[in-house]
Length: 78
Image (cartoon, rainbow, N blue to C red; front, side, top):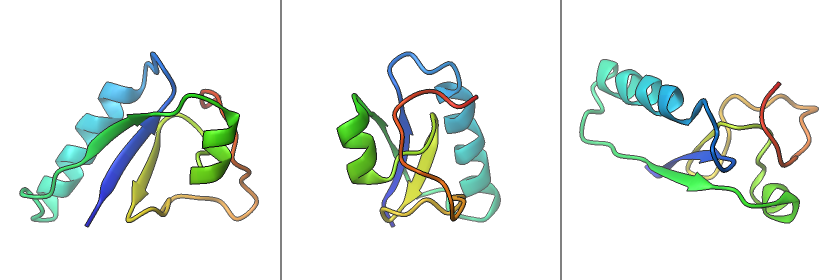
């Protein structure tokens, strides 16, 4: 399993999202599963990887929380 937390530079939600993800993995017995944080640097990259807001969590390259009408965009959530 490959898990990434995607963020824009200086995202204020990066640390809280990583903490919640770690707790969620631990709670379901996946203590040995790690994840990486990746900084998204522009709109082209956002479109290529399906980044919709900062933070975005990808599991094996897919966003499990994606909304069907969500469009890739570069920027912070909200």
